[in-house]
Amino acid sequence: MDQQPELNPDFLEPSVLLDETHYQEGYKNGYNDGLASGKEEGRQVGLKMGFQVGEELGFYQSCLDVWASAVHIDQNAFSHRVRKNIEQLAALLSSYPLSDPEDERVQDMMGKIRLKFRVITASIGAKLDYEGRPASSKQDVEDI
Image (cartoon, rainbow, N blue to C red; front, top):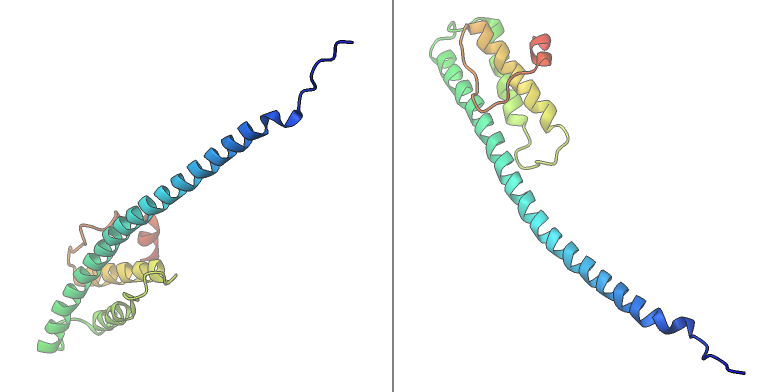
């Protein structure tokens, strides 16, 4: 009888292993490249966001400095209620965690700072607004 040579089921194994090796190598290279570019992109976004937050806080602090100077010169420059709001804004600004950007309270604190600023400017009749800030939400208006 004519016997055909038996096909070894493992004859494809080297091809499968080679394919798997290339896949793993490609995955590792892609992962490392993505990690590097992701870190750089994250760094750029962090710098941009940090700058924007610092700029906004600086705006509020400069307004606070002017109002505090006016109160220092003339205690009657603003009503007692406005002076109290100015003090509260000063406390909010000084407690903002500049050195801990991962603090979970930063968004809430920034919202309180913005709201307190709007209360003060509305009380004194000033038309001040930080131009770099996103348009106020409906919630901001409802909170006042």
